[in-house]
Amino acid sequence: MEYPLYFLQTEPFAGFVPQDVIRWLDGNVPDELLAEAFVIVNNHCSALMHIVGEDDVWGDQALYDWNDVEDRMISIIVDRMHEQGIPLPEKQGTHYLVAPFMVKQGYQDCNGLWRKG
Image (cartoon, rainbow, N blue to C red):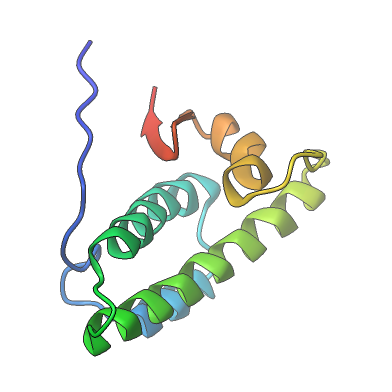
């Protein structure tokens, strides 16, 4: 079975800005969609960190805005883990923190990138 990896270099939600995604998150998004959206945003933030230059004002703002979305998603995921009785891992770091939730949704952490399957 093939598992393609996509490195996003553009907005992860075509036609949407980060604030739109935050409003979408406030609509009680099902776990499956939250996990899928987290993959997109998390991978996008990782890509932005690698391509934004020191003097790239737009890039800095984009990274800041999408990191806010990612932080909001992490907060929701942690809340849902508490609600579902999923213990928080002892290891530090975003991927470790959300891993039990993501695994429950069928995702694997592949050296910092999430993939389904």
